Image 1 (tube, rainbow, N blue to C red):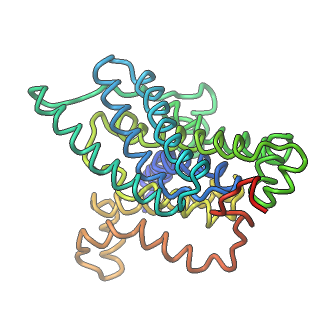
Image 2: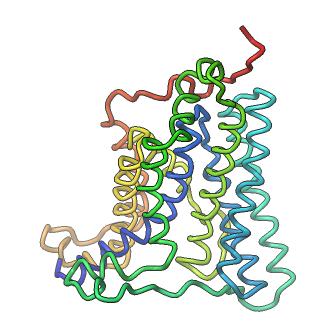
Image 3: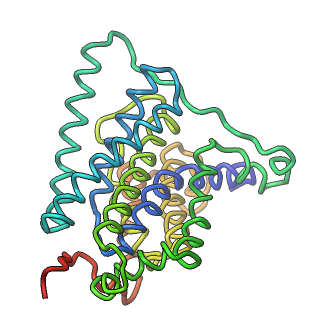
Length: 318
């Protein structure tokens, strides 16, 4: 692989990590608060649709992102009410939301296509090149020539670290996820903390979906998240419920996604020929991100989930 191909692969890795990172870092908050949320997939899918629809109708991709965040928070509010207030099973509720969003987004998009003749294309973001830094050999093109949402996603990582380990709010989140009754005794509003973290996670996941539709592309495709919400959830687990670990796991999965696209495009054909491989079936590279996810989780070792994960808390119960 020549240097240009390597730079292209690394640049694509950063770009494809972005939607995963939004969903994973957002979901990390509610995970640390004791709410298991595998509904990231459904919220990403809804955010992709809403972001595209608003950007398409308004001509402004930033409005699309804001609308996507609001839609994700709204669905997260439903999830929070069902699980935190009513005490429904978090896994079952999340699966229901994922299925509902899959059907809902498909129907709405088909109605939108029927109401608009011609191709549907929304405005996308312009690349931001950081002056000076972008001219650094190798690192410049890889790190400092991206869409604005890419920079925002990676800035969320040190912000999350600071909040979790340097603020009272972060201490409250961690306490609620480990010992909700003890936190309640000390005056922490357990339900409020869980509600707010679930809403934040929903908004961030939806922004991750919007990155797919109006960042990477200029249109929406049915089921375009293709399991990325589940991969984002896996990144949280693989990252040991820490912001830095979650980012590194997201980068690993983003690299696998970028690599499979390069394989499909034939960029790595010379390498395969040198290895004596004449042809690679397209299904094999498509599987790569999911295979990497499964292998990563297999080798993760013993995981220490938050002690109160998926456990409903009611202060009236003994």
